[in-house]
Length: 455
Image (cartoon, rainbow, N blue to C red; front, side, top):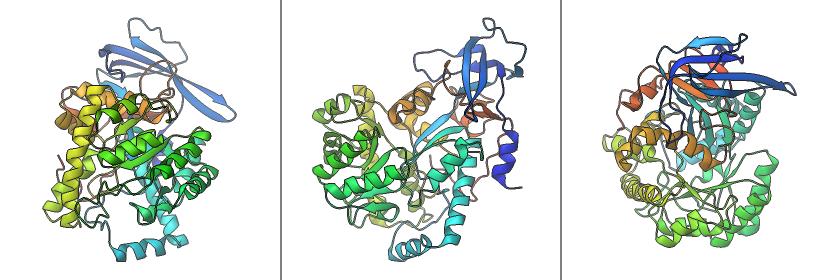
């Protein structure tokens, strides 16, 4: 039986009372609810089942209705499902995968025209999302994939036809000629071409728009190319205006101070990866009249840079010395930028950029460890960033991100206290996504990845 079907058969949507658990609700200013209870109720509307949290609190204060199934957590810890704000969903972190080069470009272009490849690609995507779900990741944001396969999988997931987290997808990215990630993006030059491909993606039913306004690491050819500004301000503004007219957020790949300033002035809603920035840029992030919501958030991705620096240095990843040096530069910029965001109250989301070897769809917990390492924050704060703060950063906080009444029943159960050791998040004992329960999660590890440290 296929893995997705195995998981699907273990999932169900019912009225459930989760009792005797220690609840970390995702809100930074809330204490752990000891011996807590969560009531999950399901309702069906137009053939779709929705499961929401009815009540949360001390078990002493909540009366469990007689028609509820009761699951005792026996003192285990419950926290919101993690949110991966930046991942490339068809990629699994396989070691030694080539990252760039003309041969790779030709191979990918050929495979994109192959029906057989497209089927295999969709199958890999589904397996990756089953893995992410079993790891307690209940929402993922797909940051550029060329075939709209994530749109198709999102539709299957919404109909209950497959096991997957909540999928928020950009479809193909949009970049200028010679831009970063051009193999998985539309190529646009000039404001009207950017508008054209924003419209194309909206027609294909994506959830948000991804542009790439600076160079990146994995296809860089000289030191300093990562972060080099490659989009004109008028192109950024055109893409943002077209998306915002359709009530869609815009995310931009940005890895330099100038790139940050120009993207934010153009109206970008989330900065992906990020960099250090000046006071003018900070003020704009907090009060951005051209953005859709009036502010701009930042999603740093420490795991990818850390993996490139560490694994390439050991000869494990196919990466040039230029790309490794650029990774070091970008990691330093990201750390400075994220620290400044914390200091100034700028919204932060969490992503691991799962596309780089050794960065998988299921080890997002390692990004939380890096947040603690580089930002000097508590485990509780790191969990908040990967749940409620991430939900706010990408615009789904009315639906998910915290264990609160009215929110979707998205949470994970772990045996040990993650406030003591974040590694507790590596192996959930239970996962609930939109009220559908996986009572014995199984993570299928990518061969060779978890035998190597990236932290």
